Picture 1 (cartoon, one colour):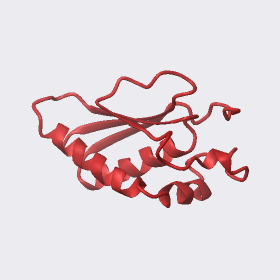
Picture 2 (picture 1 turned 135 degrees about the horizontal axis):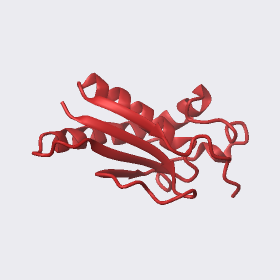
Picture 3 (picture 1 turned 180 degrees about the vertical axis):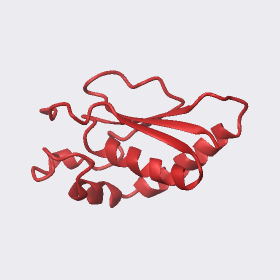
Length: 126
């Protein structure tokens, strides 16, 4: 199986990382940031995880992305497959999706590294 690197990030902090696949979660999926109870939390907190995973479309996106990784893995390349998981601030949606995608890919036999580039950055005021 292929090696996979998943980078969660916030578009409001810096450009998306160079990646084979970039998931832009900003417009299509509910943002936990708008709920004051979750604003200071991260995707590592259960309340945020539940909110993101119960957003319509997230689970099908995870499934489709895992299939896309499999297609890349069957190609002739030998470098890690890099996936960027981005939301506005890089603390909520991108983290949950990165962690959940890593779990799915590990179950399929991939070696997965996850980097949460912006999880420790201050909450973006908007």
